[in-house]
Image (cartoon, rainbow, N blue to C red; front, side, top):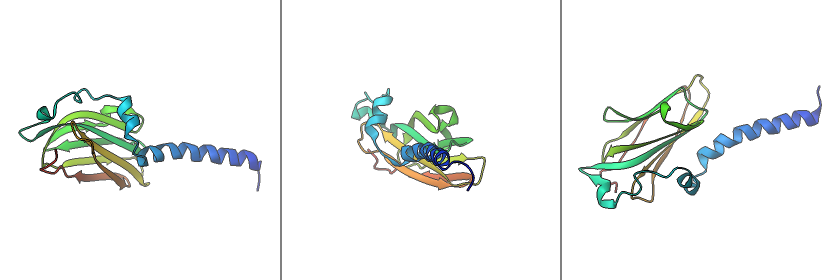
Length: 152
């Protein structure tokens, strides 16, 4: 073995720490920190304003590791979130009106064929429990999240 073992160990620990951060951010579900960082402008709406004719006010959040080249959330041919809604590296957020009972189409593309993680959270104003789903994909992802008819 050539090189200094302590230096190699230090470099390995730095690399592992750099990889650990995005993985922890995707897998840990501490909503109190995220809610404190970015207050939602629609959070003050009353429960009666929340759904009119099946329309729900929601905050859509995507967390991806590593960052995709392109990502989007669509519902019924309407674009609700894209990579332009980035709030931090690998994190995207958008406030949108979604329709009860219509699926959200999630898509993303990465530059290589390695395994990538993408987590989607849909928080509807006035509800305590968001819809969450984690996807794993190689070079591209296209999948859905079902918004139930009875989602309140």
